[in-house]
Image (cartoon, rainbow, N blue to C red; front, side, top):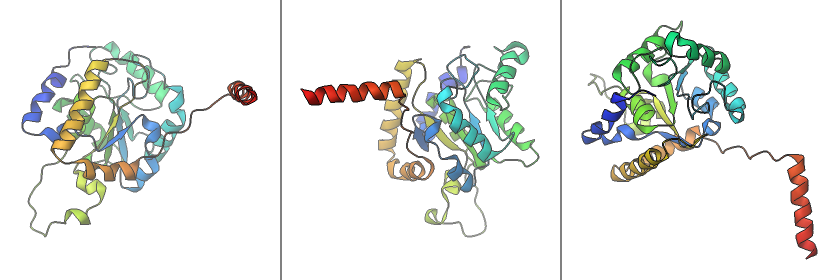
Length: 257
């Protein structure tokens, strides 16, 4: 993967905007996201990272465990409204867009072609250009941005938040706003689990940083509302019949003793 200068510079934004690293929702993986609830709340499109979010790093096919959730996501948002934005696939390191074409085929979703890596503002411009070009354009505050890295995916989502502009009419109180209106931009979703261990020291630092800033800015209760509204429990792991029989046999042996 190329040196990500925008990602390396992102921590400096903490000096004037520490909340830039705070996700609205934290899940182990996308199976915990309630896509129907997101759609009902007014979210119409989604941006997904690829590596360790949807696929094993540097692989093109979807992680098998995510098949059901990925289908639910694409059905909820509709054809063309789910975009893959990766810092490997579709970049300068993907000559001719060969890998992007392969990923698009396996995931049944378009891949953004971009030269500037997340969370660069140039990459954000590319995302906006894509969604504004759709037959039914999608605005920033109608997007869900999902990824496994704080300084790329979450920072990028928060950089897309609109700045407050004074309006002549009486502004709504926060308790009168919907969760989507309060976000003032894309919903930032952090997938904290990994399908293959990668950059674990950095991931540990990111988690500690998010926890510290969440406490320092007293954001826990505010973010808990998003967590409750848009997540569901992870499905129970499937146990094959052979394993069930083994467990029963073991239990019977223990009882005999």
